[in-house]
Length: 472
Image 1 (cartoon, rainbow, N blue to C red):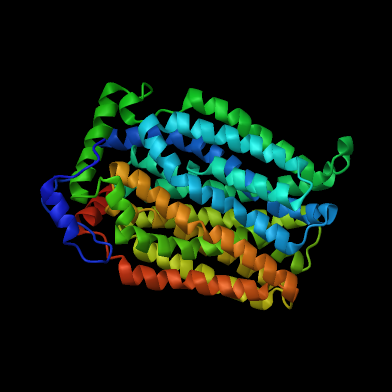
Image 2 (cartoon, rainbow, N blue to C red):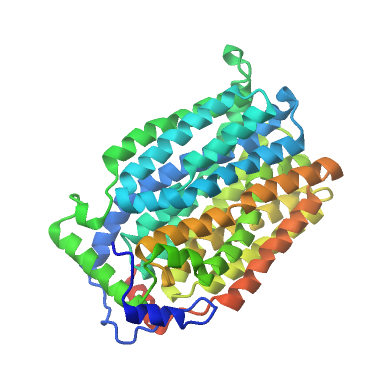
């Protein structure tokens, strides 16, 4: 794929304002998707999404199982809350360093090989966590888990843009990302059951069994990925030639409707719009990371101390979060509107997190309801957010830009757990940390309103045309 745009496009790009721009495409071809095209996309979805979601479930479980292992691990190893918070967050430093190179590698060698490599290596690192004995070893393994997992999430986002036009992506992103909620539904009770049921078996603690039993499936999935994934529609032998032609023509039509977009890697990394996206996503990730790594601790602080009970409460909250991701993404696709679907959802999440901090020590049941709403709001904002960069990036620039947005913004995943751990250790409560996190997430709505304009009329028209015939 080309690394440059023509002279006219460059001049146009340089002349834009500092805000993220939408594009006019009034001269784009008319759009009335045939039934065969919808049928083809359903076939693509059934082929790709369940498998990618399964990988994301494994990834998410292996990333966040430390939050449940913590319930036993800290006492066994004599680790402080600060040590835990730093170790939980240091994952994102490795993630930050390696994410852009990983996504550029995906652009050039293909998703199949890249995702297989990522999945296999993070599984090995997860299993190795069972042998942690010192804070230094803990930090090293969490860092390398971030290194190995870097590129998976933005890589799949980029990969899906190869298969779906813009007006279908928010729902697809929502389906894929809802797997993190499914991981919460599965992972909480699973980790709680392992902690209770396997503790002492073969002389190993329950938290060691958590890392072993949850890491092995990822190693196996890395091998399966090499046999199953297809890089692009043109290589999909499981589609008919007519179906491949329909999809490729639809993607070309979508590219025309989007107007001129940046292709060059270096230009995308310097584009102020990319950094505006980073600021927005940073605010959302701050809340998501705090909920991920300290959600079980919040539940325990509310008085629910049994690990299995903690797991089931988090499972119910993530089930609601997954539903929110899918429904919010679907409505965004049907209306062609992305910025408010993202910003308002994040603001609702922020308000609920603040309320959780207020209620956690005085009204446990209400605090758990607020925690669930905080998870729903925060998670629902994420898939719609990823519609925004695609409005001004494509090709190799999209590979670099999406990875840069995700990697830099995910530094919040390092800061939020570290701050939460420090404050909890020194105040004896999670409330102050939750209030700080809520304030940061609320800022995302203001940034979106300031920097993200509405979609252009052609994209809204395409969304409306598709929604008119799509089954509810």
